[in-house]
Image 1 (cartoon, rainbow, N blue to C red):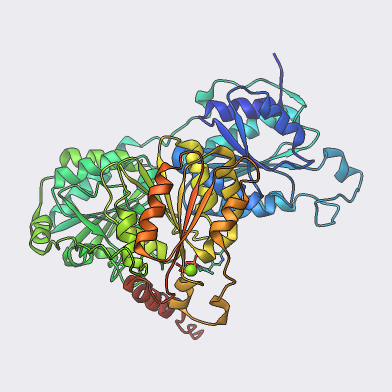
Image 2 (tube, helix red, strand yellow):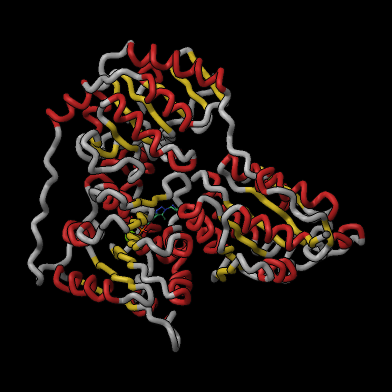
Length: 562
Ligand SMILES: Cc1ncc(Cn2nnc(CCOP(=O)(O)OP(=O)(O)O)c2C)c(N)n1
Ligand SMILES: [Mg+2]
């Protein structure tokens, strides 16, 4: 029995595990939103703007592994592109669905609202092709099922966003009903011969080295390879570090854990052991200027074996069509133990510094703030660390087993954490969410606290007010790093209007912070923002070091053309 394109899309979204889709309405998508509303398995979530909407979907995908955001043409989609860029860089399958002009308008040579004023309307689709793994326009009802399934399949397989453009007169057009969802769910199939060759060569290479170590990267998560990584770690018995964007993907209470490897700003002396090792087996790693502290901590390729999302490479060898978890499991089955690096690390292993509690009347400092936030982390906590000194404060916090850590280090869009953490909260309502965000970042997307109020999400927001863009100051200072101060505590309570339960506190002493945290823990019907006012120079030493090397990397002189 025929269905409509809008209902076809709704069925597919529900079948791939989406329960909530994120929307901002516009006249080009209203009929489509109605069709999604008709599906009892879908519940729409309304955001304040399309930038936040796309980040909320990105956060939902961090919790659920898939997300959908529905916006209107051009004026909506252009903002949403920012969150799609994040999803691409962060390996998250977010489905961007945009309404678009009636299919007759181009042929009628019409000029339309919400466009750049040209007679052609394909520019958005062309832009979307650059930031998604698959982009389709549903201009023909008969072809729509094929295009919808293609876009969703590519997104799920590649763990990248896709784009589906739905002209306003097509949502209610009839089309064939969806076929079996199995035809859409096609996970990467490992080629057995490639796997065998990769494992045999890798073992030979690893066993030719004296003191291998393991390094976890962020793609372990999108590859669903965390458990396989732990199996390999325990089979090999070596020291194990994680990249900053992979924090929490390997248990930090594991006896083989040796910290976050981030060059000179590593934690727990992870750099000492990784750089002492003669081979680092990198699983799902992404090496960028930020994750290598301005390229100062990238091992030579001769000392790296890289197991990627779907390939394996090391000096003189390359194998592809291999799912990361298949490779790690097969290696774990056959690798011999070599615990030299762990023995060496245990010799170096630093004791965790205990930070003395400040007197209650003492002015609040960054150290005391970190000490008090750290105490809140349990196995149910998900800690969001926003771009800024919050990265460094978050990275240094030891995580109890089960605690999760979310960071957007590839895209690094300040303000991401506010919409992303509420989208995450929609996808994982059982998690206790703590967000650390700077004043500059918060000013980018503050409106989405309103969604936390609307959904009664008890998120605790630690707003570190150091009166400006400190991370930028440490990379390269200038008057542009100064921002207008806000009364952040008052702002969040403004979102209550007559029925909200948001609470805001401004704290200046250790005692006031402790008191505000107590109140936040008992505010279960809405978000609590605790604004912590600290001196701009009260930042981590790690940020200062990291900023110095990133600035050097940015400042490399242009190569003289030969
Ligand atoms: C959308 C976007 N625009 C500009 C930037 C550059 N940037 N990166 N970090 C910052 C400042 C962050 O300041 P805050 O959030 O206050 O964090 P702190 O470093 O703790 O002061 C900027 C302006 C950015 N990362 N993302
Ligand atoms: Mg700041």
